[in-house]
Each structure stands twice: as C-alpha cells, then as structure tokens.
Image (cartoon, rainbow, N blue to C red; front, side, top):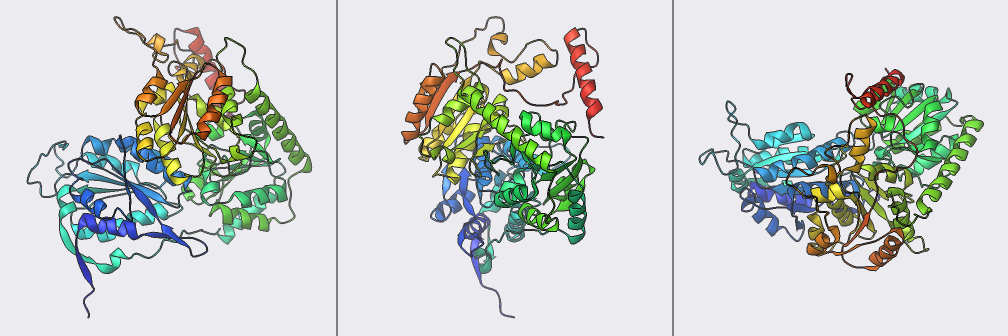
Length: 623
C-alpha cells in the first residue's frame, strides 16, 4: 500500500491549519470560511505553542485581542448567534484563571445552544515540572485540573495528550458544533507540552471537506400525529423560538401563520423571526410578555412550540397555558418532548412547511384569528403610546421611554430596521422583549437563556464582527456595566463601532423589585442601601469612565437629549457611550406569574402574603 502523504507539524500547527481551511458551503454551493477568527489572551501555556501557530496562519485565520477571557467568550458566542449558528469563532486562554474565566461563557453557549470552540491551555502531560504556575492539584485525582470544570458546561470535551489525537478530536468537536440538534460549545484542553510536539500529520487533514449544514426532515409517523392534533385545534397559538431564526424559517413561519390563521407569540430567542407589524404577530409571551400574547396563551387549546426550549419565562413557570395541549416542533428531541406534548422532531423550516402541507385547507376558527389580530393591533398601538409618551420635567424616565428615544432617533428612511439591539440581564430584556420593534431577522439579540450580566458590551462586539454593516445598539444597566466594560476598549482596537446606552438606576433595581414583590425588605441591591459603616456612596461617572477607555461619551439630562445624541452617535465612526439616569420603580404592563421560592414561614406579613400568591400560582401549574 502506498504510504499517505504527511507533513511534519506541531499539534498546534495542525489544529490551526485545519481550522483555517474549514469552509462552509451555502445552499448554492458558495464557500466561505467557517471559523471567522480566534479571540486570544496569551499567557504561559498558549503563547509559545498555539500563539506561534496562529501567527503563521494570520492571513487565513485572524487573531483578535481582548481584555477579559469571559468577555472574549461572550463575543464569540454572540458572533455565532448573529450568524444564526452557521459560522463560529474560537477562543484561547492560558491555564489557570485564564481558562476558568471562560467557564461562564461556556455556560451561556451551552444553555443557548450556540457553537463556540474553547481552546484553554492545560498543564504538562509529562508532569515533569508539576506543579506549574496556576495549576490546580486535586488530591486523590492526579489527572484532574481546572479544565475539567468545562465538562458539564460543553457538548464535547477532550484533552489532547498526544499530538495525533487532534486528528479525531477536532473533527468531533466540529461535528458537534455544526449538528443542528447537538449544537453547543466544544472544549479542547491543550496541554502546553503537547501543543509544541511535532508529528507526521496526514496532508488530507489540512484540506478538510466543506461543511454542509443538515436539515432533518420530520418522521412520517410523527408528522401524521402532529397534523391530526393540529386539525382538531380551534384556538391554536404558535410560539416562535430561536430555532426559527437558526433554521432561517422566518418565511415558512409567515406562510404557515397566514394560510392557517394561527397567531404567533415570540420568546426571547424567536423575536424578530416575524416582523413586528405583521397582523398575526401577538408579540412577547410569558413572564415578561405583553397582554396580547399572554391573553391568547391563556385561552389557546393548542400551543405549537417551534424551536423553543420552553423555559420558565416563556411558559410562566408552566402555569401560563396549562389548559392547552402541546405540540413541540424542535430539532432536538430533548426539547420537543417537554411538557409531555406531542413531539415533531425536525428542522423548523422543513417541519413548518411539511406540517402546513399535511393540514392543507385547515384553518383556525375565524373568530380566533380575528381576535388575535385585534389584540395584536391594540398592543402595537399601546407600544407606540408607551414609547412616545412625554416625560414630565423632574421625573426620571424608565426603560420604555429610553427604548422609544433610541428607536426614533433614526432618520425617516427606514434605517431603523437595520438596528440590532443587544442586551442580557435585568429589567431591560423584559422591556425590550415587549417594546423593541424588530423588522428584520436578527434585529433583536438578547441573551436571556443564562441571563448573563456582563454579556452586553462584549456581546455587542461579537455582533458587530458578524454584522459590520448594521448599527449595533447595546442596552446595558449600570450594574452590568460595572461588572464588565473592558471590551469598549477592544471595540476601538478592532475598529468596530458600538453605540452603548447605559441606563443608570443606581444599583440592581430589577432585583430590588423582585425582592420587594416577595415580601422582603430592600437590602443589598440599590447602592444607597449598601453603604457599610465607614463607607460612602459615590455615584459613578460612567461617561467619564467610558471616555477613559477611549470612547466618545456623554451623560444626557433627559430623553429628549438622548434622542438628539443618538442621532449624532449614528453618524459617528467610533464607539459611542450615552448615559441616562432612570428609575426602577416603573415597568410596562403585561407579564404573568413566575415561580420564585418564597419562605413558607416568616415573621413578616408581606412575606406570608407573597407565599399565599406563590401557592395560588402553583395551583395553576401544569403537572
């Protein structure tokens, strides 16, 4: 047998060359790089081995500098989300705290079903210099170190202890990240000695076949059961989840809704899959949903959950629509069977198309469709009212009025449809879910699966990398800003302009409201309540801080000035930070019950009353 052609390479060189050569094949046969680049913070463990390999391939696989490992992980995750999971980024760190800083980003990607390739450095396989700087030693388990913490947080984990193992480990990681059902983060822990070891790498490993994304079709028997269930429904409601966007099923969703008269409600993940002004778009559903979608959910006889995880915010802790039967159309069986519903395991686009064909001629009750359209129209009118209402002099605005000013700062040329709103935690996601008007897919980018504070600015950076032609507006509270803001500087290094709107309510206002709603006293949330003996509360000058990081920044005095400064920021070429003082005491109507553990025994009457409300909610919960 003729020996296969090989190339003498280090493990790190083989990894990087394979990654740089991977291409994604589009539906028309067009090719583009699958991995858009690598975020790297170098340290001992990756600067010599992987760092050298990345430098050599910088023309095909760019390396980007970040300031915080968790933040660069968030940026990579956001990039994949903005690319609808078709393209990815990799991240690499040193061992020790550099690697463990990536754990939160790994959890975000795992919860949100998003692909990212994590390449943390690892200790020496030889163990000759053990214990090395930053090495965690686990008594009784000599083969365990800090990187083992990634195991429950990723879809695929491997530690490369021989250079030739990269030949199987890397393709497996890529397979997981490109599989529509398994999609999530992959972690290859790279011991620093093995990174630098050479081996005879097969030449064909350096020329991988293009990646073609799968679209699993429905099983005929499952499709028949789903069609029978749908035909028996009179008041169906479809909930669009992130899977609708990831499978590019927006058009199939629109056609299905119109042909069959089915109203559509949106989870955080699915918002923007149907234009906000479509007559059958009832808007946000769930704990932070609007009245239209929640009223329909409470009376539907069938809920068709398409591409959604059905998390507690979407289902009102499973108490929003306990009367309805469930049909789960999802590419992941784990999600399709939630709520003991009828499962239709398939790609969202193919599933909607084939389910629609299977029930050709069937429509929801005309009165139900008309009612849904009327509810959606009333809610849209109310959104306009909320977001354009004047704020009285001397009264602090709340998120709804800020959202309206940002939206309406765009010129009357339709360019607002180009905006991408980025957010993650606190009250802002709830208000954006109800009030942001997304006209095009991807115009709403809110990480609310893990609800990760600190994702916002870093996520905006990843979104701008993925969609440089669109205006990326990051909405962030003062708490999240203080938690992670360093990637403002990174955005300047990379020439990626962001508009960051900081809403300063002087602390964790969202959690204080929850604290009070469950009967507890105000404590440890607003900064004025946290001043220890001998301490002093000094308000943060966020605009000055952002200027120190290199951004152009201003603290506006009111909503009118915010709108003016937003118009100016849209014309700017570098990152802009706009700060406005807001109140946490007002919120937009809507919502539904959310299960939060309330003490069964308390000396406080308010806590006892809150526990009674909890019991009432539990009585409505789906078993």
